[in-house]
Image (tube, rainbow, N blue to C red; front, side, top):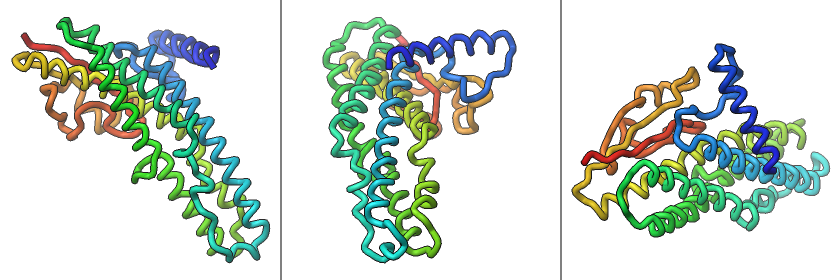
Length: 276
C-alpha cells in the first residue's frame, strides 16, 4: 500500500509541473493546491482513507450479491419477506474497518493540530489538544459510518433497501438490475469523494480544536481564521466567494460553517493567525 501512495504522490508532483507549464490536466488527476499547508501529508491521508473505503465497498458488494442470489434464486422467491439489510451492510460490526477509519481520521485531526502549532508561536499544552482531537475523531467516525441519517452505511442501507424492494415489486426486474442500480454506492468515485471530504474536515477540525484551546489559555488574544479555496477551475459557486474571508475563531463563515468542507468533495482549507 505504501508503494501505491508514493506512486500517486509522484504522479501528483508531475501533474503540478505540467500544469505550471501550461498543459491542461484532467480533473481526475488534479489534487490539492500546492499552497495548502501540509498538502502532501493530507494527500497521503486522503489516499489511505480512499483505500479503506474502497476495500469496504468491494466487500459489501460481494456480500450483497451473495445474499441476493441465496435468497432470490428465481423470480418465484421474490414474494418472500425481504432479507434484513443489516445482514448485507454490516459495517458497524466490522471492527477492522471501523478501526482503520478512526486511525486515519485521528491522524488527520492531529495533523491539523500540528499545522496550527507550526503557524502559531505561543506555548500551550499540545498533549491535551491532541487528546481532544483523537476523542473527536473516534466519536465523529462512529457517526460518519453509522446508522444516523447521512452516515455512509446508513446511505448504503437505504439504497440497498430500495433496490431490493424494486426487485420484489417489479416483474422482469432481475438481481443483476438491482446490483447495477447500486453500482455508484460501491464505486471508487464514491470512495474518493468521501476520502477528500473527510480529510478536509479532519484537518480543519484539528486546527479548530487547537485554536479553541489557545483561546481558553489566552482569552485576550484575538485569533482569526481565513478560508482558502484551491483557486482553480474546479472551485464551486459555494466556495468561490469565501476565498480570503476572515472571521474570528469562534465564528462561522458566511455559509454557516466553521471550517471546510462546505460540501461533498470540498478541497478548501482554513488557516489561523493571531492578532496581538
